[in-house]
Length: 398
Image (cartoon, rainbow, N blue to C red; front, side, top):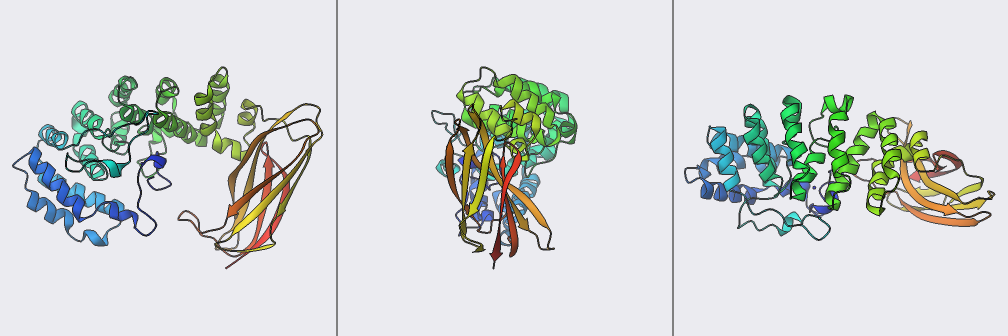
């Protein structure tokens, strides 16, 4: 959605700048725009009451609480009959977001708010459909089909998969052939077992087999937007069923073109970082380095907020070329003094017989929203084809 870094599809949505909190994507102007378009779609809509309910104390709420407050206000002011409410929602919408030649969606900032509702306001509308539509699945899914083309319905569709799995999955099976890439992406993204910020689909965590035919149908989709979702879906599955994903790579890598190969690589990224043997073997990375590897750091002490230089020296002793996946794990100090390893992507390369090669990289030690950095001794492991080949240490200072 970017969206926050944790958000699926994040590289193609617009997030606020560093100076602008994420919660401000929903604000008083959003409420007024919603009221105006809902009144246009249904003249009996009480826009004044909606704006009063939606805007009460909005400034003091974080993003998700703002979205839920708007959903509560919609629940109180849309028609009580769900089918009629769905008609009003659909009539209030802007035209679908455009797609470029690669099937990537336009940024939300490019949506024309004068033409109808799109973007962040639709999170709240999707929530209303999820709350009210569970007793009328066909009508609710038609509404989500419309909503996802203006924003996303990946969160709103999940209660339907959980409560009514068969009719919802049957609908998703038809949608893999939908002309809209937005809808085809929803098939994969909405059924991810562990979608960030979304309801966990525990049945699919335990048994992902119902979605595998959907992913198979979409893995060669012409839209990069859709294929990236398939990769993320498979990466979700890998957390609970690593052997299944390793087998998927083995079966689908043979004869794969560049786009499918990229998808499979992205799908198996976590398993490769973890050194999962079957996945490494599926990528012809099952053999250890034949030769020597050394890791050197640019400084023994680095301050939080700075960068640290890494230099890797490789020397091959094999008589055949070696395909190598080189990652590094930083063992961060926690608040309680223990350490936790985070694996970072390094290099993918082929090392020729007898070749000596030097690789360099800068590693940022700036704090991020998902990790607090603490001063103390840190360690870096150099991992080649899933095996630790070298280590180095540094002190992180405040």
